Image (tube, rainbow, N blue to C red; front, side, top):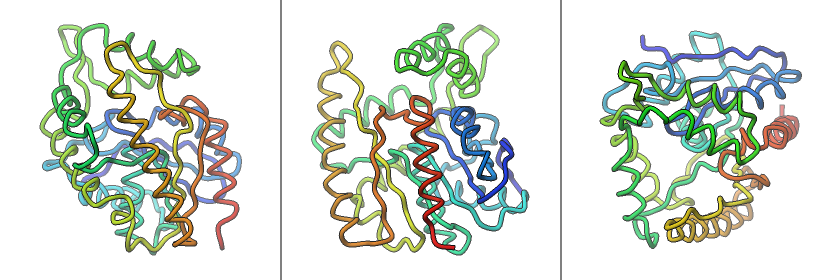
Length: 284
C-alpha cells in the first residue's frame, strides 16, 4: 500500500485533514494549523509527488483521492472535515465526491480552475505548462521567500515552506515538485475539471461544502497586466456562479477571505476562524 507523507499537528476535537496547493507542501499550513489545534484534531498530508510524498504515474485526481483514503485508514481516521487550499481544495471536493460517508464536510480555499473558453485561458495554460516541474536556479528559495514576505508572511515560515516544496540538487539548483511529467498530467486533470464549469463540477456531491474565495488579487507585475486582467475576470465569474449555487443548494456555503490567493499563509488567523466557525455550525 502506498501512503502519503503526513504531519500530525495534534490537538483534540473534530478531525480536520489539511491539504496544500500545487507545487507546495503541508508546511504551508504550519501557522494556521497551530491556531486550529486547540479545538480540533489536525492531520496534514503532502499530496502525491509533492513534499515528501511518493510520486504517482499517471497523476490523476482519482488516484490522489484513493491514496488520501488509504493514508487516513492507516492513521485510524474514519471521518473528517477535509480542508484544502488551491489544488488541495479542489482535491478535498473530489474526496467528498468519492467518499461521502467519511467526509463530514469539504472546505475549498480558492481552488477553482478555468474552462477552455475563458478569454486568455490558452495563454495562461501554455505559460504554466512551460515551467511546470522544472529545475529552478540556485536563488529559487530566496525568490520564493521574497514573493510571500511582501504579503506579510513571516520570513521563517516562508523559508521553511519554500524548502519543503522543492528538492535540492547537487549543483545548488532546485527541483520543483511535482516533477515535470507528473506536473503536466496534473494540469491535464485541472483542465478536465475546468471544462465542466463550476456548477457542473460540483454536481452530485453530497457532503456540505464551504467554498472560499480570495478577497484580493495580487497587483500586476510589470508586463503581466494581461494576467491580472485574466485572474480578475475569472474571479468575478466564480463569484457570480457561487452566488447562484448557494441559492440553489443549501449544503453549499460561500465565504470571502480578505487576503490574496495564499490566504492560509497570509491571513492564517482569518482562515482558522473561518474553518473553526464553519465546523462548529455543522450538524452532528
